[in-house]
Length: 343
Image (cartoon, rainbow, N blue to C red; front, side, top):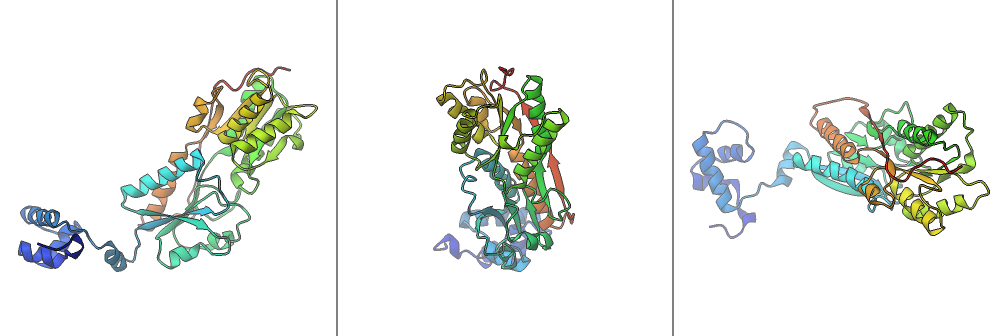
């Protein structure tokens, strides 16, 4: 009887089973030819002794850490409390878990290159989330040869990085089409952080849709802020105090939109009778807000799932696609926060 589970070795199991260490290794690693009777007998001994493989030693042999790094900007405080980003992380974590891959969350320091995580063999690959366009490490990342993928674009076009992202331009066009059909002509945009390509693409879609409908773009109706309900509340109140307030407010995410609805209600404005509000992401809270929020849906879980699956295939050499780039569709979900323009 072994004193502790940590002391059990392949040799202990081999001695008890009366087989070679190599045979035990084949059973542990599910590799090679072993008779079914022998396999069952060895597995029973393994279970009885409570043997756990030394994954660190195994990883040293095969040159892998069995860990993937998720890089998040240290300054992006909204990520950990944001339902959308939590869903992306869930998609990543569940997918990696299916392949017995660990997930290391790394809060990025702009002064430390992300590549050190890979070159020091701490991780086998990297997934990047919400990286701003002014990140000083981007040039190096664009030229790297190690497995990596972004859950957002870091440039609008002609960039060699691998990414999976949503069609923000089309999503914003769907929102404008809906409001236009309800006779709205003065529509404001609370976009989100200006240093994110995803936000810039939202703005691009907003301007494109207005221009195609013959509505002049009023830059004073475009605001940049954090993805937060407080920012949405404060800016909605500011907008409605102007001499010519908008009849509709589009928001870069649902948290901004939920805050905007709250601020409007506090100021005595009714949604959607006085002002229509549209969010983006379609998080679970959207359908439970008051009123239920019209929102552009993007599939956060699928985005994380595809990023993790693709990175795993890069690590295992199943694909060598450079760059892998995939745009996911968006869809407008119409609920109770939009109505015909009051004027």
